Amino acid sequence: DDTEYLTFKDIERRPQLFWMLILMVVLVIGFSGWQGMRALMSLALSIFAIIFLLVPALLAGYEPALVSLVIAGVILASSLFLTHGFKPRVWIAFIGTFSAVGVTCVLAWLSVDWLRLTGFGSDASVYLNFSTGGTLDIAGLLLGSIIIGLLGVLDDVSITQASVVQELRRANPELTPFELYKRAINVGRDHVGSLVNTLALAYLGTALPLVMFYSRANADFWQSVNQEVIASEILRIIIGSIGLILAVPFTTAVAARYFGKREVGADDGHEHGHHHH
Figure 1 (cartoon, rainbow, N blue to C red):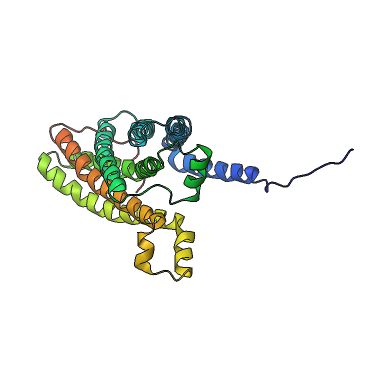
Figure 2 (cartoon, helix red, strand yellow):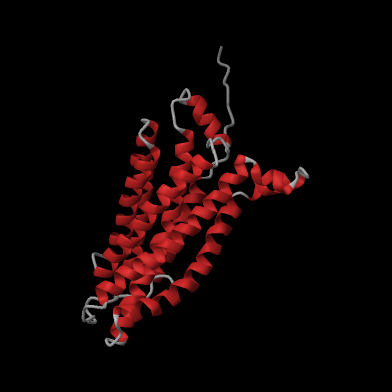
């Protein structure tokens, strides 16, 4: 009968998002040049790996901890090697980070079990459980998200440690592997101090409405901490911090052992100094 029905779904935000993205790309490439270009490519690859590899594997019901660990390795390799090339220090950063991720994965797996976290802390998990007919391991998904969330900070701290050892060795070829380790660990301590803070603030920032909701409800603080939705965020921060603290000595030890036995020339060094300091 010629009646037209119009449905308003949402405001069109894609053009604005597109321009914001362009701004970010221009700034990254303007500041870091070819290095920035490679970093953006590795970011795109990481997002691709999560959406097209991790998510389908998890939805297919594979063991979340194992799948997340494998995909973490893929993301780590793409972000490190694509951004920094196949240099010795990058291999060292990869080995250091991946071993830290492995240990952290086991720790996260044990603690999710120990704290009896169900993974139903967020609404999204509840909806997901309904839409998949309860076939997914939701607690495992929580574990996967902890592992993937850890990667960004870990590759950052590892590549820095490997670079520091290499630079120290180049500046003073007399240093023994042990002295290299000792000096580089001092830098690592400062770095970890600031990054643990970064990690906690990133998670807290995301959970801010939640924190406000609990404070508004006049809930007892200790009672709130026990709620799964809060407890799982606290666990993320703890596991993330442990991962960071492990990645530094792991990477530094491997780097000190490798560079301590070699001449470090200018050719295998940096094309760019520190990538983020």
